[in-house]
Image (cartoon, rainbow over the protein chains, first blue to last red):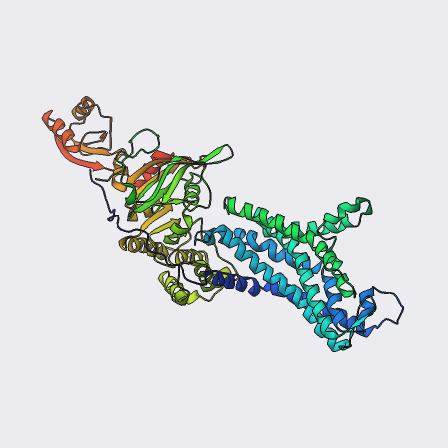
Length: 292
Length: 335
């Protein structure tokens, strides 16, 4: 029997693989470059950064006469610049920040699946758990950057427009600017944990689909559904388990006698959401067939 | 001889007559099965790709080639059977094994708003076994190898189909590999590009790598493959060295003689089907299915019966004819 047997000697084994140090850092750097160089994501940061400037300017131009309505925060604005940071976060929290999170976190896995790059990353190979970790850390860095940006631009604009006197809290007491700054950091951390729950939800939806816009729209729809349900008083204590119910509880940090336990209690909801949906995303990611 | 010859006639799945030692196989699947609902996409496939071979993986659209490849790469899990790639079980040891496997699966896929070079750098960055200090160099070499150096900084989105395909091949060649799994590598390439890919496959094989290349361009495969496997409707119909697989095809003997009638009688006596071909100038031409007989035996029988034999030629079908013979003529997707 004639055969074109080009079978080489079976000596070609698996050549040795040395793992190089700093692998995780290298992967994360690559992911951050991807997230922060994408024009869409940068445009969202520009919009978020513009919001505190707009609010500050509007308030400065039309300074409300004392005793003339407006939310409690807005009234405090003219007293101290730092309050612009709180105001900007409060205005961005219901819609703008969730939208940015829906886009970036919803895109994390579904986006790679839709471009087909997911299969090539996995055959590099990268373990699925590692990939989910790198993708989520990349997106969470973006979330943290977005929140910090709003707070920072708010603070700087506020200081420029309204100065840096002692900070008068909602409870009426005045504290020095430095401790006001400390409370601002506390607010930023609180908001980040609030949004962590939403990010986990978006990641989970992102593992379910190959259509990124589906995961994004799903996340936004859920935020709206939470808000709608939260406004129905008949639902009573059920509303306590809605992700958005305690989102604004950081207002306590702006009163003199805030209670750490009550703040921690408020954060229990987003932390639970994070645990549940991060686990679900991991379970889905590590078991799914990659057909994209 | 380590030939893997399939039973020649029936449509039963290929059964290796002489199983080769597992350590000399780059890819080995046993009873690999994968369903999608009621539809069995991959049905009891026992794929054996010898190390160092250029294995042409053939089959009509929807025959289960790509699903098989996805199973080989651990992108999907089988419902039955096992996969071994380079001696390691997949998906259990996929993270060790896949670093040595370069892949192009179902076309190239990259981030559209990154340049070709940045896309490769991203893949390189995710490889835990490469040295970050030489990343730039690896990427440049891979781009150069597929002729994309000039377009390295261009956004992937602006690449032509052929350029995208080249970038996909470059990604598979980012580092030396022991096995390359290339799904339709010449898709969208111009004739020069197709030739280059062919040359590239030969080079890779010459360097000792095993290449599993799926294609439906059979003439293409016939030129580079040492081995082939043919899939249809989820089953692996044939596999083995190209020569052995084609041996199982219907080889025909063309006989030129002035005495067609006697020749037909002799052939019928040997139990062979023959039909009269074109004839001219007092000569007759016959086409006989050879079955298990060799040309010299048939010739001896003709001569001893007094049939003048003017010409004798063995006609082996091209891979394409054999392929159509096995997988059916119709244009319709099987399922």
